[in-house]
Every structure is written in structure tokens, then in C-alpha cells.
Image (tube, rainbow, N blue to C red; front, side):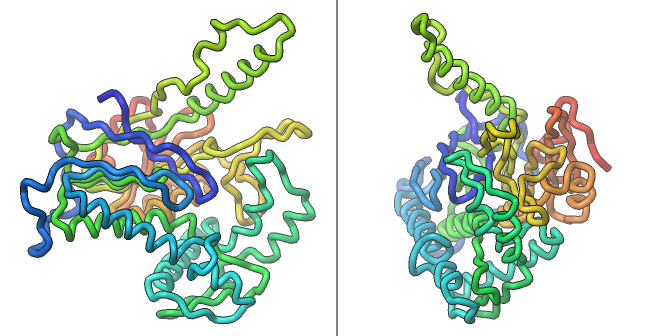
Length: 393
């Protein structure tokens, strides 16, 4: 197969088509744990075959490919729908919607919602607030569809209501003490749900599967070709090339001398060449990048991207274009990837080395690459063999 799966994490406001996986010729790396089928609900052998399912959830395209039954895939879709009803901050009646409309009162929620909020707060604390679940009002000011940058006054007013310390969660309640603040779990929910989808499939007896929820990838076992899965890390150059091509085509179309049909023959998306391809089995791969959503501020000539620094309220200015977290759980990859970009390469490398079960691949804005973190994971994914990648120790 010539296509590959791209790990690229976007938030709930951005939809994109998730490419399909392809298998690698590399030998199977060691796995995080044996994915053994449960003693119950094991599907009948003739019902189990390679199947795939596309579906829309969390305002993005989701894709699951597994050696499973149709019932197994139906269960996956139903599970995702359940979590969307609980965790969406835009869906009226969801747990998070209820918390955000409680005007500072403690709100009864599903115990699983409360548990995820507590887990999210742990990552807020661990990252010293670079991951912050109260960033939603500030993020709304940056309208990437309308290419609108907020004023300094608007940013300052929104920042007064940003701060994860305003949130508290018990076993089955959540409170945001500032009535004008609100929370969103968009920076961690898809990772958590991807882990729960994996657990569901394992309980159904599925050993081999590929799960992508808007780019939050979990690779289980082996591909249909009996080899580990390949995950492509999206290249910043691809997005720059696409934008440059779009501008050139628009200029040609406006030309008073007419349209050169030869110049417009390739209006579609060109085949994407990833920055690198990682070999994965029983791992999560989550990428955050500054090139997924951005716009040019024509007034200032500045390019604004969607990864906001909670300290400044503006797009972060670190030296990183993307950070890819390789971890045993997708929750961890989701919770760490955005904060790593804000940190910048050196600080992020030091931080990821402190995490016992995670590693990271960094692509700097100048195109150079670096890897750091758990050496076993780096070897499993062949990340240490990426041409030109600096190993940060």
C-alpha cells in the first residue's frame, strides 16, 4: 500500500480526513503488554476478519481498522458517541456543557467525566500550566476561519478568566469557581477515548487494530500483512507547499491574460511525503503542530498558529514546529504534546526524559529533528534511526 497513517492532533474545531495505515517490513517490536482476548465475548472465528469503519465524532474524522466483527466496530462507534455526549463542551446537555453553565456552582457529573477532569488537572499541574483546560474563552478570540486576530485588550480580558486552579473535581462533581471561566477537555479527551476504544476491543478479543480519532493514533498488534503498523509524522513543508500552491493558483486565476490550464492541472492535494515514518505496535502516537491551523495577519504580516501560550494568550513562539509523543497510553500523548511545543526543544527534551513511559520526536521550525525520552520506545519505533535526528540526552 502506498498510503500511510498520519499522526496529527487537531482540536475539536478542526476536521480533517485521516489517512489509512500501511504495514511495515520491519520485525515486530516488543509490546507494552500482551493483548490477550478475554474469556468472554470472543467472536466466532469465521465472523472475525479485517474490517474498517469511518465515522464522524468530536468534530473530526475517525477511523478504525481491526481484525474484528461488525458488532465490535458498532460498539466502537457507540462508545465514542457516549463519550461525546458526556465530554463535549459545545453539545447542550453534556456534562462539560452543564459545568460551564453552572455559574460557579458545583455540578453533578458522570464519575468518568469527573475522573477525566482530575486526570486533566494532573497534566495541567505537571506542565506548570502550559496545558490548561480553561483556555476555551481565549481560544475563541482567535478565529482561524475568518483569519481574525484579537486585540490586546480582548486578550487581557480573557486572560483574567484563564487558570486551571479554578477547577475542582470530586468523585462525581466538578466546579469552576469563576462564573466567567469555562473548561474544555479537547486537549486530552480524544486520547482518553482512544485508550477506552483499545480497551473495548481487547475485551472483545481483538488483538490487531489501528485506531485514529482525529489523528490520535493507537496501534495494536500487527497490520493485515502481519507486520507492525507504520505511522507517518506529518511534515510542516507539506502544509507550506499546499498554501504556496493555493496562492499561486489564485493569482493565475485572477490574471487578465487568462488562465494557463497547464498551471492549474494539479488543483487537488498532492501525495503527502511525511517528515518520517515510525514503526509501531501496541503504542500511541500523538502529534501536535503549529502548521495544522494558521492564518496570515495581512495588517502585520505575521503568521498566527493555533497553539496558544496560556501565559501570554498569543500563539507560542518556541523553536518547535511539531512534537510527537510516543507513549503507552494515548491520554498521556494528548496531555503532553501541546505543552511540549510551547516549552521549546531543549526544555521539552528535558521534560520528556522525566516521564518514565514516554518519548518524543521534535521537528524544529528550521526543519531539524531531535528525539528524547524512553530509549525502549525510541528503539521500538525506530525513531533513533531517523536520518539527521539529534538524540537529546
